[in-house]
Image 1 (cartoon, rainbow, N blue to C red):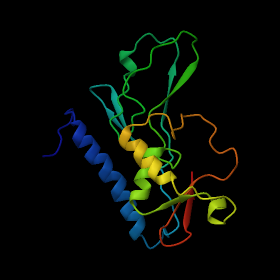
Image 2: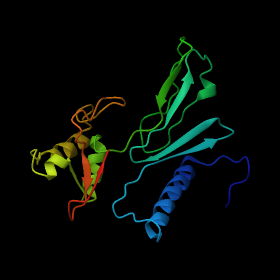
Image 3: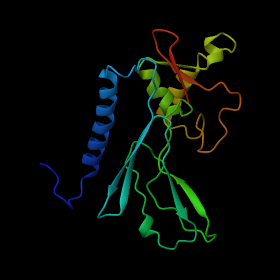
Length: 191
C-alpha cells in the first residue's frame, strides 16, 4: 500500500521510486512535442531524505555529481551519517572528522561517464560506440582491443586499471570520449 507519514521506506522501495522518477521524466521529455531529444543527453541528481533515520539516498544519471560539504572538526559522526544506496559505490560511510574547521567535500555519487571502465562496458552492451571526435574524424587511431580489455578487467575485478579518481585531470587534450549511436556519427555526447 501507500506509505504512511513517518513510515520509513525500504532500500528496495526507495530505489524503485527514484528509478521511476528518472524514467518517467525521461519518457515525458521523449514524447513531448516541445522538446527535441534526438541529440540530447541526460544528467540528473536526486536526493531522498530519510527523515527519521537522518540519512540520504542519492540517485544520479550521467555526469552530475552530488557533493556534501561538512565542517571539518565536527566530532559528531552520527549526525552526518551518509548512506549511498544507489548503484554507485562512492559512499556508504561517514568520513572521519578533522580538526581544521574548514569545509571538506565528500562525493556522494560517481559520474556515469566513459571515463569509468564499468560505464564503458555498460554503454557498449547497448550497442553504442565510445570514441573521441578525433577518432571519428580519423585523426587518432581506434584501439580495437579496448572493449575486450574492459570486459575482461570487469569480470576479473581489475581494480584501478582504467579507472579515474574524482578530481583527476581527465580531459587535458580537449578531446573527451563521446557516446555515439551505432547507426551513425551522432549524437556525440561529451563528458
